[in-house]
Image (cartoon, rainbow, N blue to C red):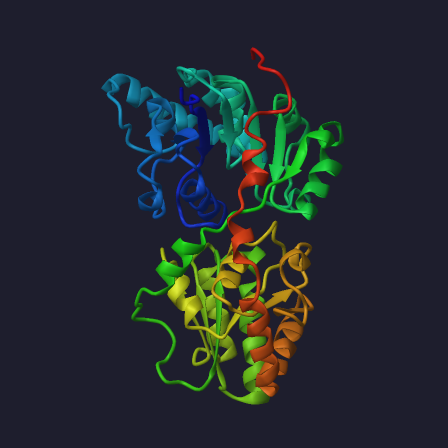
Length: 408
């Protein structure tokens, strides 16, 4: 008699383009559906990655969550109830913005004082519930889900985020495991939540190699100049302060001033800093060598057409983009953020440079001066064991929880 499948709930904020969301897509494409029966609950049931969710995944819906997080409910809801929830959402947002200025603290207050009481418990029981996005997707699991094991997955270095640690701790005490994506991130969680240190585990961001390579073969019409002999550099990520694209623009200015227009650099992504970075590119007079191409559902053809990935971040938990570049055999130039050396072997498959425009520029110039060195880095990148990037056992081993079944 076949063993019953394990019933798994995964909660996440959305499937919008982002590193954690891409990690979730990869995980869902690598899970064994002969073993797991998976429900996926999205607080905002939308995003460009939704079509990449496998058909075996059951996307579930809670109408109250849909309305409170700005999505048209999939299930039937009375007009009166929907209107009341919309009014409550506006009131909650307004009040918490007055009381709390920091976003993460504000969302915790909004959940506790306003949203939680409006949202019903989820029917059924799960072998394990995993919050893939943290925040309210985890608070919901703790308060509203029956599960034998609970896991929360953090995708950032929390030492760089101002959170209400005391408020978060009250929820973490219910988790069986606190998963994160790198040793650096794990260390920061242990420092911030010392009483939960024994629960912290590292579960790497998975990369679906076959999906990445297949998508990299698609044609794009706004990529690098065809036939150009210039060094092709690509960066991929949200255009936010953490990604350092302002430093990229200033680095491009230094390289152009000292070596001319012998390179072209595409930044694939969008975000709140896009206009500011574009204005900086224009001020520096480097629009001919560095260009913002916007957010792309499929960034891999841009990566496949490049000769170098530039990861100019100020901080990263563990970069999904860097692992995807490794799948495509692309050498990496990375700033020396805390987890860079977990992925990039300096001088073997990439360069790690100081975290400033001059350091980035000197790294690019070194590769322009010595193409043979760049070729060696490419060979090093192509020689990595990509199968290890698909290993999800560090995640699946958390799903049973360390304790016996318990009532919550």
